[in-house]
Image 1 (spheres, helix red, strand yellow):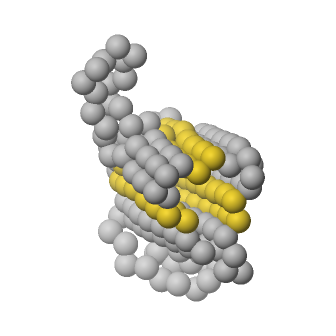
Image 2 (tube, one colour):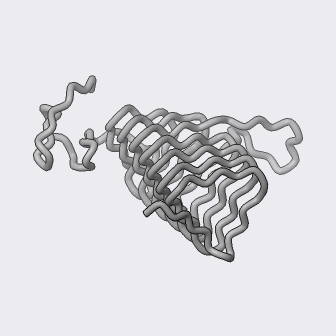
Image 3 (cartoon, one colour):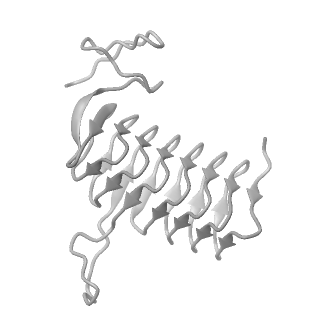
Length: 179
């Protein structure tokens, strides 16, 4: 389906690029200078701050706020109410604060209610467990859970957990991962 859909209650500011086939749902706000790729699904009650780039084929679930300084690659899944920060030293009175950037690489999946502290890179096809608090970089295909998040295994591009030999029993792929 190539048709773009923007719900009438969504607020789309100036200079926003929305790729074909993308859907933006109820009460979403897209600030100025945002680029959203093709075939994305932006859930209800989302906020995408100015200057954000969202890749193609992304799913951003309900209640997610993406603040200035986040870059999102293709095929990224962000679960409901996931939280992102962009200030390492937040104070309401600090006039000189700086945005600390966060990168989410291709195929990464972030579970519901996870918190991603700014300044990290989430590697390709990694998976963040629901409710986890990510405070440091996550390697490609790593599965992390907890507070603070720690690696408990690795996952295939299909999402299934790899065995100890880096083999996926779900789709029969074998990986050469540096564990």
